[in-house]
Length: 87
Image 1 (cartoon, rainbow, N blue to C red):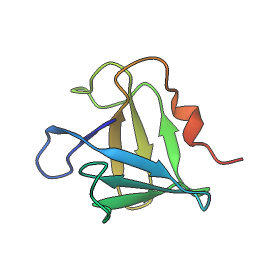
Image 2 (image 1 turned 60 degrees about the vertical axis):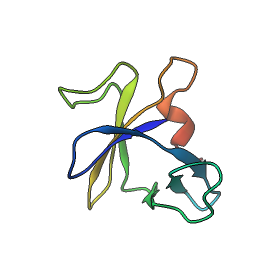
Image 3 (image 1 turned 180 degrees about the horizontal axis):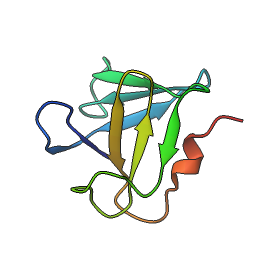
């Protein structure tokens, strides 16, 4: 997926791993062992699809946490943001 930057508002390819604990970690590449950051997809996280961001790409969605709003884009319709929802 691609992620829109918080300070520099450009889109960057990131590799994501969703852990059982509800943490979505993102990395610069598949080969980098250290995560650039993470989103805590707990009960307080809200997912909006499509994205409310006016400059968002097709298939973009927002993940709103108490500390930040992330704008992510999967690039095609095969992935749905509901896959990030915890049971």
